[in-house]
Length: 167
Image (cartoon, rainbow, N blue to C red; front, side):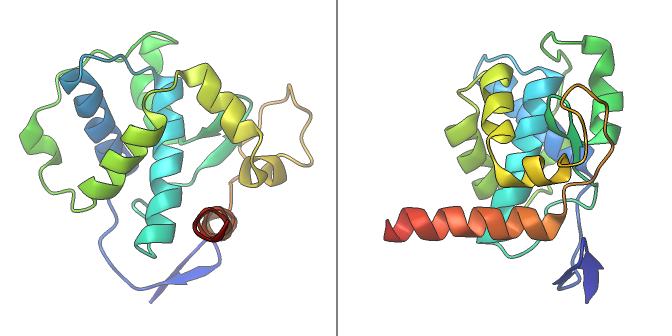
């Protein structure tokens, strides 16, 4: 058993967030849609959140931080920052993402959130408890590397799911 963000998890292989990012970049290209780094960051956040709820485990071990523009993963941001706010234009081969087992979760996240632009997803994440709590002690215009606790993400989205199915 391993503990991630204060939550005990059954030991399993965790993907690098960069691999999950490549899946979303591949998916966007396949559908002829653009995906910026900012939008990618939000999709990664939602993929982690919903995998925690639906599969009871994290997708990746990388910390999600509460940045000014919403949840973000430092390593993925660094990888694609040269694109700025423009769409990421790289060629991802299907073979690079073939080992991902949770494609159903990723496809559902893409289906629900992928249709929105980065700005809408930023507003959405700002309205939710995990990002708000992680930034409680930070001025809204200040840079922060505060980690959004994985346990908080899981409990928040579990409540959302329970409310939706009983509500």
